[in-house]
Amino acid sequence: MDPVVIKKYANRRLYDTENSAYVTLNQVADMIRAGRQVKVVDAKTDEDVTAFILAQIIMEHAREKNILMPAPLLHLIIRYGDNILEEFFEKYLEQVLKNYLSYKNAMDDQFRKWLDLGMDISQKTLGSFAPFQGIFDAVRGDRDDGEEKEEKN
Image (spheres, rainbow, N blue to C red):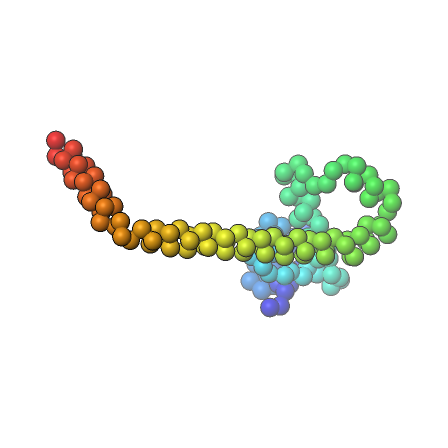
């Protein structure tokens, strides 16, 4: 699927060319959360400003939640400059996040399988009590009759 092309105008407005409508940063974030890729271009120069807009979305979210990165980490980033930060993001952070998401999905699937297995085992175990089913039904029937009697009184 092609990315949604968004034009950024000098007045900071963002225009979704796919839907022919102006959008907010939150709406762009919602598109991304829905699995879409976006490409943001400066309307005047056609320069790709996607990274800037995505960083702006992250910063806005961080400002609302009053979180981003710990201050000591931000100090290190500023102290050692763009080179180390660019290298870190290009070489490591993206791969670490992809690995984390892959591992998380695998663990979620495994946990789901364990739950399903537990349900299968419990059903088989209860099935082994079939010779006693008459007793269970009788007890359940007595309880149902008692409940009905109490309701009538």
